Image (cartoon, rainbow, N blue to C red; front, side, top):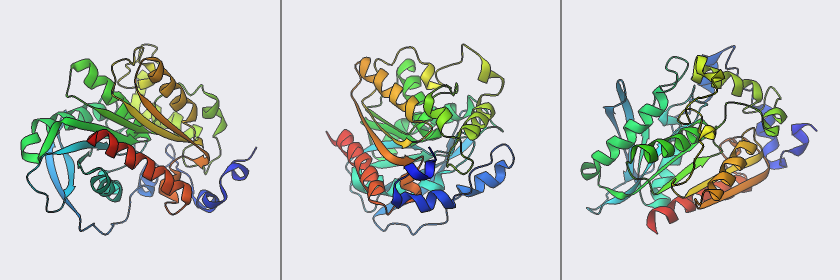
Length: 312
């Protein structure tokens, strides 16, 4: 059955107009598709940019906090942008991070981790971990309550979120009270039904792009049987002890089945998990058609989940 006939009518036009990424043929052009135009900054959120120590070099971190905040320490969230490990920049999520600040009453730190193929695994996850360590070590100057720190990200950033939760657990910190890997990129094997189902060229994220992105990120390691779960979170044998989790995915998303398997395994490991499946929705639907009712409902749901987690 064609994707067109299954997509919600309110999302269909945006789906039909998207040209589709071409990672293998033209990575730089594909990267330009996720370069967001400047957005009008909210007067209620103060944003600063800092250069912080990364794993191998200095990296950019953007800090979002309530404008005119008082002296009270606030909960904090590390946000990890998406882009299949090969695209993206913190700037593209300015509006989203501002909304987290306002809805969840928190400080948001977003890091510009190194991208593949120029910097393959483990560059990205090491930079994300360095960002988490930095924000907790600088908690006093940032006005952060280290007992209320969450991590979140979407797509490739969702995969890095899941990997970071595993890495922080296994290293014994920093402490994370909540993780939100939205429609995460978790599994390089591409063996699920949904990974074979989403193949059309103009689909926001199809099988060809997924195979290419994993090859760029993992390189020769992509075919290794003993690959690290910090590279491919679905390979983790033990999910016990991870923080409470929220995630969602569209039913027409290539990552549908690996997300469902992940939340099932989390629940079986005794981890509290909230999961939403959105029929008729493709990858990144709420970004492509933000005015759609289903998009507004999805975004409000994960905003509210973060607020509950940080203030309960």
